[in-house]
Amino acid sequence: MIIVRKEDHGCVYTIDPDSNELYFAPIYQDNTVNLSEFAPVDLSNVDDEYDILTIQKELINLNK
Image (cartoon, rainbow, N blue to C red; front, side, top):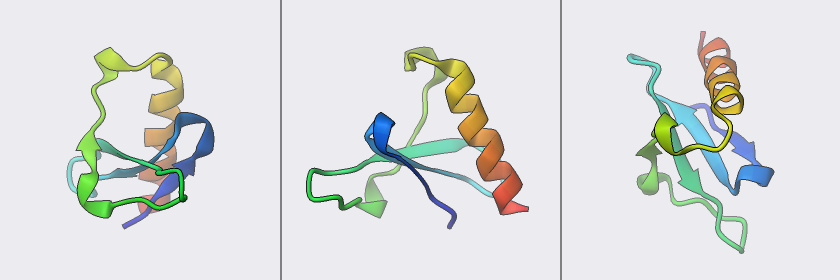
């Protein structure tokens, strides 16, 4: 599993290697992440869709 940490988003991201669907999980105050908390990213609920799509593209490229 490839994970990209985005401090300014307060979460980490990963993708499903089969579907390329983007998932996120929160970073807690003690800098931990619970890997069982990954949830799909809903593009209709994000502030900057371009930024999220850039993260998804980065993960797809890293996953190759």
